[in-house]
Amino acid sequence: EPEVTQTPSHQVTQMGQEVILRCVPISNHLYFYWYRQILGQKVEFLVSFYNNEISEKSEIFDDQFSVERPDGSNFTLKIRSTKLEDSAMYFCASYQGYNSPLHFGNGTRLTVT
Amino acid sequence: DQQVKQNSPSLSVQEGRISILNCDYTNSMFDYFLWYKKYPAEGPTFLISISSIKDKNEDGRFTVFLNKSAKHLSLHIVPSQPGDSAVYFCAASEGGSNYKLTFGKGTLLTVNP
Image 1 (cartoon, rainbow over the protein chains, first blue to last red):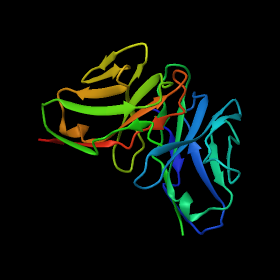
Image 2 (image 1 turned 90 degrees about the vertical axis):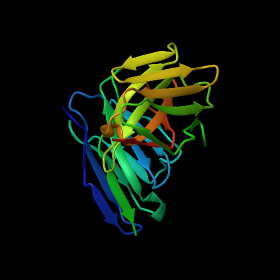
Image 3 (image 1 turned 120 degrees about the vertical axis):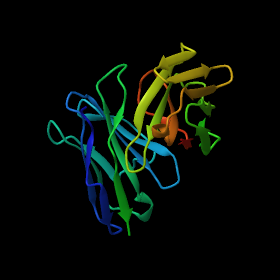
Image 4 (image 1 turned 180 degrees about the vertical axis):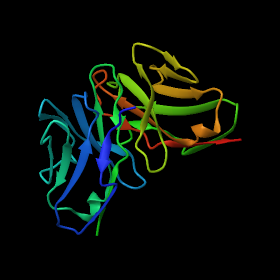
């Protein structure tokens, strides 16, 4: 069964550094999402992306965050200057269109030291 | 922000019996509800969904019930199997299958052989 692939599975970075989290959504999917889960807390919506632009973003998704679909297969989340509180599990998700389920990747654990 | 609440952090049932997981919501604009299952080190996996125009949806061993007046939904698993042991998340969205999801904190289900 096709799946959403995320790399790396674990990323350690120093505060203030830039990180790029990478995702390969399922190939015929059109809608792309990033969610995150801080340890012990709920899974939270960050941003949705469709037709090469952001459809919606949460208040968490400030100017430090950006998303890009640089080619036909990858979908990336960039954090420009990481903070300690950015430490979380980041999930990429995608779906094909109306009435199809949202598929999540296995996540990238980001640790900011 | 407690728009979606799963008040039981854990539930333990015997193999073969029914598992009932509960979820309450406060936002009356939610009109699409989903259950996801999550194993450690994996992303959430879609289980079943229900639109607010229905009060029940069934898929194999899984049934979701929606009580709009009580703003309550539940997931029934019959019969429960040890492989069902996982964290179960309730999630909700406004505007149909728009996947800007608001998640509950999850319930850890343990099915004992």
